[in-house]
Image (tube, rainbow, N blue to C red):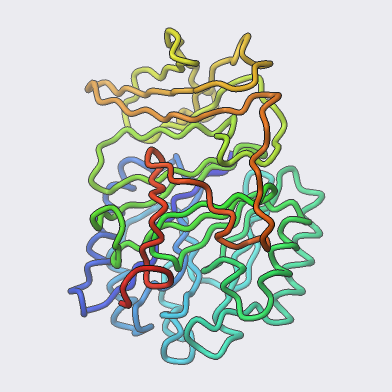
Length: 368
């Protein structure tokens, strides 16, 4: 099981008195207490420094000081506003791109879609990086689990390679492509690959400007995605398997429900199926954040509502609710549209932070 936290486009800038980095520091304080040991890494998807300036990266470094969770950062078009990425090297978790990281028997591929272009949103992979990606995806066929890809924008936002890239991801069996850039929460499902974007931490137009972050888990071939507001209390729960109908890509059936619980001093976790009396879930022997319970007689049914509720020793509770298609459930109807485009966006799902508004500077929002 691979889990990461996605903290969205920071846009660190004195123009808003460094609102993004102030919120980043608030998030990091929570993460040190609530996410330590529960996530494998933090993904920062680009547009980190609003103008790519050293002083802006210095603010990001200060905000993340003391965070002992691995960070993987990539650049966005704003990071390259000066025409180069020299200052981006100061970004925690920047490293060399592209790069492959192996975790949980899974290949995680971090891409740079800004350097080969001409600045601004001229997103390209370039021939060398595209060849590297194709080789890595080919090699991933012998891995235990399907690969994940991390990039600043959807394939459809690339200048020339988008349609081919979406087809490559589908053919290679990529489980998940995680992105930023949109400034709003959105999940796409083209029937084979799940794409997601998480709202900006500073430049937010949806949800009354509420900042937050997403937690993504790949549990075998099942994908879960859920957004948490910074202001919402802990604990926090996400069902990791089976996948909700919106995130279903034909994954093989599992005989149990698994969930991941984030927070401290968890006293009990329960599972309710179709509104029946809840059953107590078992805590994993090797990973205390993972809980499971058998599906029992529901394993052959055509669908069910699954609700997992976690309660800590102080009486604070949180629940996740999904709609499971079941072993004979019908797959999503996919539009006749290129892969990797928001034509495949799932419907609004407020319980997971998806409002379907597309309120951002790259769609219907104001120009920041």
